[in-house]
Each structure stands twice: as C-alpha cells, then as structure tokens.
Image (tube, rainbow, N blue to C red; front, top):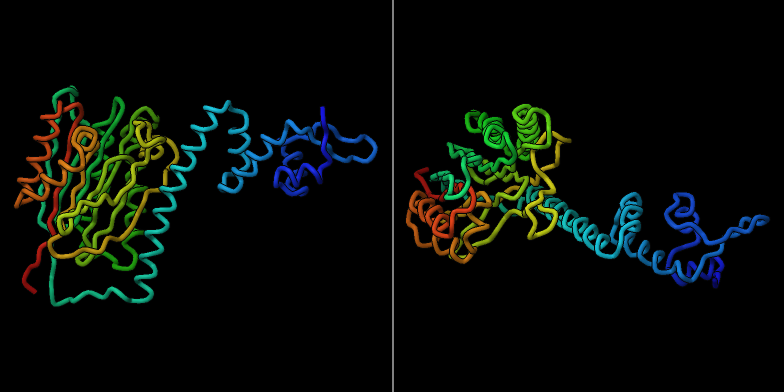
Length: 338
C-alpha cells in the first residue's frame, strides 16, 4: 500500500492539512496510518477518491454530517442523495432570491404604482374528485383577498387540507393588511395552519397536505407555497410557473416539504407584482400530472372568464383519465373605478 504524507495527500486531494485533521477528528476521513511517536498522519493513494468527493461536496456547501452519510452509500445511492440535496438548495435559493428582489424593490422605491388606477381580482374556484380516486382530498378557496389550493394525503387527507385552508381564511376577513409585513403575516398563518393540520392528522406523518395560496394586498399578490400544488401567471399570452415543486426529485411524488405531523417546514414566500390583464392559476397536481402545460396555457388563454377557464381545465384533466382529484382557482386582475 503506497502511503502519502499529509502534505502530499492534501495537495493531491485539494484539501488543506487543517481540513484533513478536522475530518480525522470527525471520523469522516481517517488516515491509513498514524506514526505512534510523532502523531504524523499518512494516507493511502486509494483514499484520494473519497477525499476528492468530500472536497467537491464541501464546495457544494453540503454540511459535514450529510457528507458522512453520502460517503457511506454506494455510487447510485450517493448520486440520489446529492440530487435531492441540490434540489432543496435550488428551491431555498429561489425563495431567498425572490425575497432579496422584494427588499431591493422596497428600499429603492423603483416600482411605485400609479394609484389612480385601482385593481381588483375576479375569480372562480372549483374542485373535482376525478375519475379514479374514491374521495376528494383537495380543498379550494377563493374570497375577497385570499385564493388557496391544498392537496391532502393519507387517511386524514381531506380534514388536513380543509384545516390548512381554514387556518388562512381569517386573512380574507381582515380589515387591513400591513403592506410592509404581509410576508411575515403569511408565514405566521402557515405556522397556524401546520398546527391545525397536525391536530387533524392526529399528530402523525401519515396524513398531511400541501398548500399554495395568494393573498391580495390591493396592489400586489403575496404568495405562500409548500408542496407540489402550483401557481401560474398568464401575462401577454405567455404562461410562467411562479412556484417550484417541493419534491425529492422532479419526477418523484415524494415531497420534501408538506404540512404534516412533524416539524414545521419553512414555506416559500414572495411578493408578486401585478398588471391589469394578468391571469393567475392555482392548481393541485391532479391537473399538472394529467395535462401538459401547453394545453393549460391554451385553456387559460382561450377562456374569456375565470369560470370558463376553470371548467375547461377540469374537463381536460378528466378527459386525460382523471387519475387524481383536480382543483383550480383562476383569478383575473382587472381595473375598477378609482
């Protein structure tokens, strides 16, 4: 077995001697031999592969505890774990990016609206059991300010989704919302929703719900999102998804985040600038798993009124086999008299 000094091994692996000593103490990367008299560390050439993997994972920002778990897996398992880690990083980075953009916008005051033009939402919401599932575990809501879709799962999925939406409904009845603190208000509401879901699910992780909601402030829409329901914006004929699915992998049905009986997950929150003529869609995955986005855009663009768009989308999902419950909220931003 060919041995390298700690200095030579550090240069070959691109890890500093200080890092190698730390990884030895943490039992993440132990030396092949330690001199009993001097305490000097020696590493085998065969350890370079693992050392380089550790170095790359540190460059990704992966915590040491998770690196230890990855290094204990075979190649296929390690690849899955890295993919799942990076999906979570991207989702969290997107949420922080949106928050940073909002703060820059607020502090520089570059997007002051023309308050002579008053805007309001006109909307329609509908939920359908579909053609396969024995019961409907989705919950939808559309009120004066609040639009919401929740997709329950597990034996108490329907009570869980209903509890989550019900916990947010007080926002629809509030006399006034704080323009500079609405995201904090939404986060607090989701924490209350999480507690309500935990109670409805009996405190277990066997049942829970996703939750995606938009809250109208009078000039902007505040978004809160957790799970794999989706929010879309149709603007000038172009359809843009404004949420990211919180799934372990893009094609997986396993969720990274949901409201259930475990620890409270952190939702994505952001403020969405609106324009007259915008059309928003909130939907459960019973629509998006059955109907391609091109067909969704066509239905949204071809329907003059929100109610017609909702009916067209649910019909499209059922014509595709209706494999799941399908729920839609469509809302138009329209001008009203000042």
